[in-house]
Image (cartoon, rainbow, N blue to C red; front, side):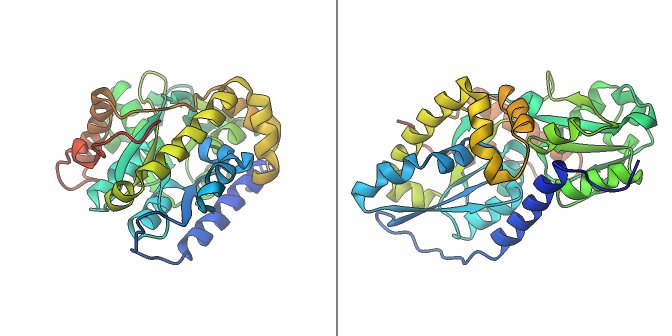
Length: 326
């Protein structure tokens, strides 16, 4: 197999790299106004915030209050949370694992809400030619993954379920999905951990297959996060944001083909790939419940056990105490 990333996956991955660079160059500011005049929102490819951006609904809802919206795309959760913690954006979203790692690093971010479980949106991808048929076959193999990825958590718990440990594989740490897929297709690793829409794109590539998704292992939730000072001073603004987000989420849950058509021009990837990913996702935002806190606590404890988080975390400490959902 040629050692390159094929279209449409190539276009999606390269776009993610450019988004990461753009995010890194964002100006930072720690100032928080009593009522933000520009709401700065961080987002990643293919999610409810991305859909909200495409709809233009939030701009219309905030215009009568003299508030504008600026959108900032990031390649992955860690970069977005770094921008949030330094004041470059006001709110955004990230998966479960990056959110825990942000707390572990002392970043001043707080959980506002969560999405519904999305276990099929993460996976362990392998090459068919390597004839790996079960997670047990990863013993002694090299696996491309990222530190603090939601898909890295899947790798850890999938190995545990298979009677193996993280030490039974050799992790090849990469910074983005593009590098993970390139390493897999070159044969330098035997598996790669991915998330949607990168996962959905990889599943369509000849010679690649999803060995294991998160079903029964990880709920793979997306979380909406901000900072306490911003949330304290802009609760009405956040309620408007979540009200508009709820409207587009309800629409997206029933119209996966329309979601794909909306996002395909933005992402530069086939609508058919995005439709597959959208069909297996529930976009609705929900409050942070004790059950969800427990899920996050288990994830944090797992990463601590792997030595990737140096100390015990109490996830509940990072939950914003007042609901901002409408």
